[in-house]
Image (cartoon, rainbow, N blue to C red; front, side, top):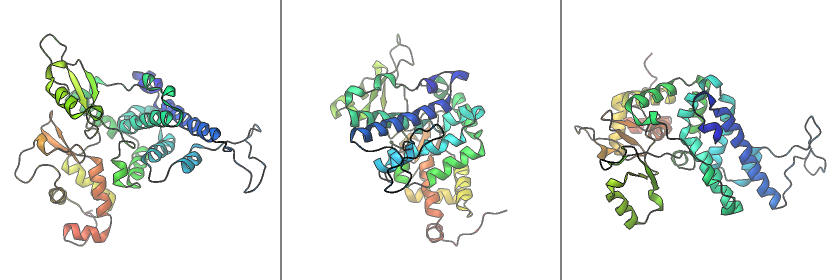
Length: 332
C-alpha cells in the first residue's frame, strides 16, 4: 500500500501490483499448506519428480493455478485478481498516473478482497485493516481536477486501454458491477457549522448502520460526516461518458452503426437517465448506470451500462430487435 499511496514521483503503481500479486499468491499457498496440499509442480501426472527452476529450486504453483483451485470462474474475487495478473504486462512507468486513475476502483477491490480473504481464512487476529489505507486526492474534489483526471485517462497507451476493455467485455455485466471486482464510492461533504472546516470528514459505511443509525446520521448535517454508499460512483467521474462518447464506444466495439439517437432510444427503453423533455437532475441518477454531475449539471453514463449495451448489440439478432433495423457497418 505504501507504493500506491506515495505522492508524486515516489508513487510506484507497478510495485504495488507486483507486491499485491505476491501477497495473494502467498496467502493462497498458506491456505493450501495448512490443509496439507502439495503446492509444487510435478514433471508429469503421477510422477514423483518436481519441476525445478534454473537455480534448482522446486517450482511452486503460480497465482493463476492457485486461483483455479480456490475459486469458481464466476467468482468476482477471482476475476479481480486475474485482471491484475494480466495488467502487469501493460504497465509502463510514464503512464502509471493514467493507470492509477483508470483502475482505482479495481485496486480498491484488490486490497479489500485480500483483507476479507485473509480474515476469512486465518481469523480476524491476522487483519491488516489498520494498515490498509487509500488516499483521497483533493484533485478529485473539484471540476478542474476531474477534467485533469479525464485527461490522464485519455492518455492511457493503446495496449492498456485494449486490455482493460477486452477483459471487462469478457466477463458478465453482473460481475463487472460487483464491488468485489470494482469497489466504487462517492465522497459527498455535508455542510458544517460556521466554525468547522468545510472539508472535515468522518467516514461512515452506510451498509454497517441500522435503519435508525442511518436516519440519525443523515439528519446530523452539522457533524461533517460522509456516508459511503457502495452503489454510488467515485467522485472523479473518470469512467463515465456523455451520450456522444457512449454512442461512439458502442459503435467501435460492436462494429455496427450506432448513433446518439440510438443511445437515447435504448436508455429510455431501459429507464436510464432523464426522460424525454426533462431537465437533468440528480433524481434520475441511479449510481449504477447513470451519474449526475453537480459541477457540470449534466448526466454521464457508466461503463457498466455501456458494456451492457455492447454485449447486447454485438449479437446481430438482438441488435435488430432493439433498434428495429438490420445491423449495418458504421459510416466510413
